[in-house]
Amino acid sequence: MSHTTQVPAQRVSVILSRPTDWDEWIEIVKTKAMGNKIWEYVDPSTLKDNLSILNEPTIPRAGDVNPQKPTVDKLDANELEELKLLRYDYKRQIAAYERKDAALGSLRSFIQETISRAYLPYTFKCDTPYDMLTALKTRVAPTDQARKMELIKRYRKLVKAPKSQDIYIWLQEWEKVYTECKELNLPDVDDNRSLFDFLNAISTISPEFANVWIVNIQEREDAGTPLPDLYKIIELYRNNQRLIKVKEPPSYGAFPASYQGKPADPDKPRKSICLCGVEHQFPDCPYLIQSIRPEDWKPDPDIEKQIEEKINNNPRLKTKIKYARIDAAKKQDEEKEKDSKDTDRESLTSIPAKGCF
Image 1 (cartoon, helix red, strand yellow):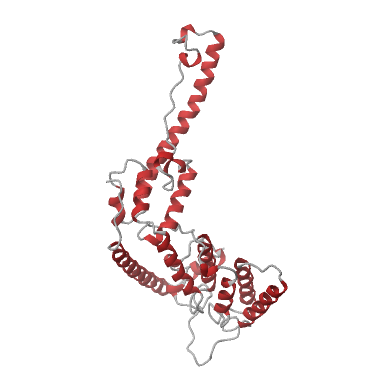
Image 2 (cartoon, rainbow, N blue to C red):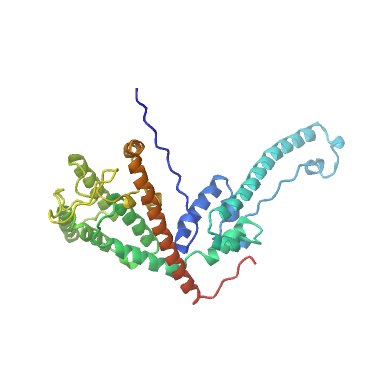
């Protein structure tokens, strides 16, 4: 009887090492704080004067029951019973306080453990996690203008026809960037522009799907009927691609050459099929390279299982993947270094904000 190795779920950690990491990183901090019921004490978006303060409860005494009787021996039976109830409630309060106080201490460590060394000095001489977060927010969090410029750059990259990128990662990026653009009210996604941008982007790889929906949207506009939002169109396209993948072997790449799944130009060199069944190189595979996975990417357990079996049965393959991961890490470090240099250049034109020092 054969035994298969279960692929363990890989924990994705976000390190705050540049301004573009801020939104994801602070959400993880918020989730951890809310799980321990301490977010109200550390929320950096709250002014300090309005911040909730964790106060240690005081043990009830006889005077709290009857100010005229400062000692327990002077209380009557009913007053003694009331004091017992107050002290019972105190035990619950002090237990809750101790849990929150410990969680605040743990959060302080968590913050310092999940930021780059360059940002570590910003947390020094800060008395509370709130002070640490506000100091980091002041120095690291991108301004609204910087966030808008970054989003516009990412959006414009998406509206170009995709090439070798995994289709599902590309679709997830569309949903993520579109959501963030809507939150900032960017004009690039106003009205129905995003619908046509998306359909134009896929028109070279899935022309029939794109053409059908462009006509459909135009007819609905003329008739004055409601249009589907971008999320719905992406959902329909994602399901369509899954149906194609089920009907035909995945032999024509992450993005099929046409809506019917016909092969690409036979004169062009073909790429190799990855272990995950998609036509791309190892460095482009989210199953093999953890660093390229989008935040909300979820692996297919069956594909993970197949990959693990192939790797375990082929030492040479394991070596190739090892070097692919090393190359991907080097590339990521180079990109971070470039972003860091860009951030340094931007900081030269800005006035430094006041922190905890």
